[in-house]
Structure formats: structure tokens, C-alpha cells
Image (tube, rainbow, N blue to C red; front, top):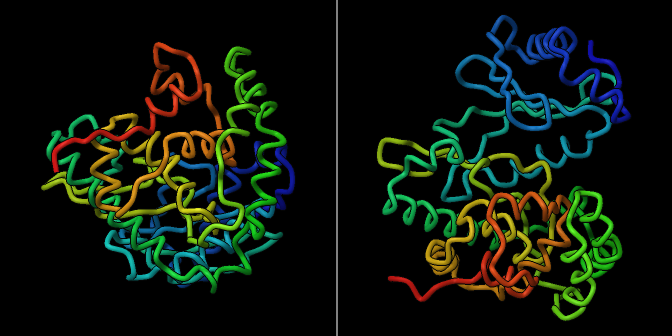
Length: 311
């Protein structure tokens, strides 16, 4: 029912088109024993995702992203019931037609933390970031070995080399001004990053947008979206933490890292920010702002420094 999607151009035509996607999703639901259940497409995210009735979620992956579908199904299965924050329970995953993959999972309860954040009182924000830190500590303690056949990058040092080689052009393509661009090579050369770190299972996009929260008491009720998961250095996960959970707030980052059990050098986290697969420094500067002194070391401290705040 769904056509092959192997290029960006095909993606742009097929994936947003509900006259194509909905019949395919309905057909797959019928095959999975959920025929007739109402389908409601979520507006967020790059992949087509549907609520199937009140209890299930169906996430679809075109052939161009089929490996992500396999990864998400495997990672969620590996994580079931193992984290302090609930993750979706996998009911089924596998191939559909024309290279498509799917994951049928349980529907988590709660409100998206990114949308709720402005309403969360300060004291509850402090507890929520503590819960995030505790959840990451457990995630990073799990043995990633069973997922080594589906998650990259394999050789962490080689991954860093590839990302360094393209770091300047990646940011130039996103519109970063020259005064910042010219600092990147020397900054990256000055920051030692492990080429063979302790291997951890990484979410890679730890951000408010991927947490759910119960507004009645402000407790985390879900963590989702593991399709870009990787195996590598635990510090890599703290790029999203600093940018999109604590948002440059040194007191909140201090609380989160205390709950996690360790801190990281701000320079290392900014280096990983520049090397991240989805790095977009101009966007982060628009969201968080730049320090008065427009240097990368100053930026590292502004975004990833921690305070000696209350314990």
C-alpha cells in the first residue's frame, strides 16, 4: 500500500501526504489485528507516527530510513522496564512493504515536556532534571553489547575523525558567521576526546521534546524516540542535556549531573556539540544566545558550565 521512498525528493512527496500514508497505516494496522481502530497522526517528528486508538502507537519508517526502524524496535525491546522513566513497550516491529519498517508500541501518557516547560514551577523543574539525570545514569549503565549489530558508529575514534573533517563546512552550510567558523579547527584540536571510551548506549537527542510529564505533580511519565540511538562516549548525550533540557542554566545542569553521578568539562561538551550528527550551532545561538565574549571557550562555559548551587 505504501510506495518505496528511497530519496529525499520521494520523501518530501510521500511522507506528508495523508491520502497516501493513511491507507497504508490502516492496512498495516489491520494486518496487526487493530483494524478499525481510529488513527490520529502526530504532528511532531520526522517520521510518520500515528496514535492507534487510545493504547497503541504505530511508527513508520520509509525504506530510506529502514535501519532506523530496526534500531528503534531493537533498542526499545532492550530497554523494556529497565529505566526509571517509562519507555514505550514494543508489541511488534518488522518489515512492511516496499522497504518500509514499522514499530507498534504502547502509548505513553502525559504532556510533552517542551510544551509544558514554561508552566513548570522552578522547584518542580529542579526535580524533573534530577529525574532526567537518574534516568540517564541507568541508561548508560546498561550493557550495549546486544545492540552492537544494529547501532553505530562502531569505531568511535574514526567517527570523531569523520565529524571533525566536516565540522566547519557543516556549520557554514547552516549559516554560522565567519568569526565563529574560523575558531572551530583550533578549538577542536585543543579538546582531548576519548577515541576508545567506555561504551554506553546513547539516546543522542536528550531534550525536553522527547520527555512526557504529568502536570499533576510534575513527574516524568515517558522517554521516547530512540531511532537515532548510538553506542559511544556518555558525554555525547550531554549535548542535548545542556542545550535542550537545562538550556544553559548552570544550577539546573549542576542538579542533573549530581543526580547522574559525574560532571563533564564544558569544553568537551561544546566539542561534542560541534561534532554531533545533527549539529546546528546557528540554531543553538538563536535559542540560547551568545556570551559577551564571542569565543568558543566562553560559549562552552555559558552553555555547559555548572554552578555550586544548592544541594
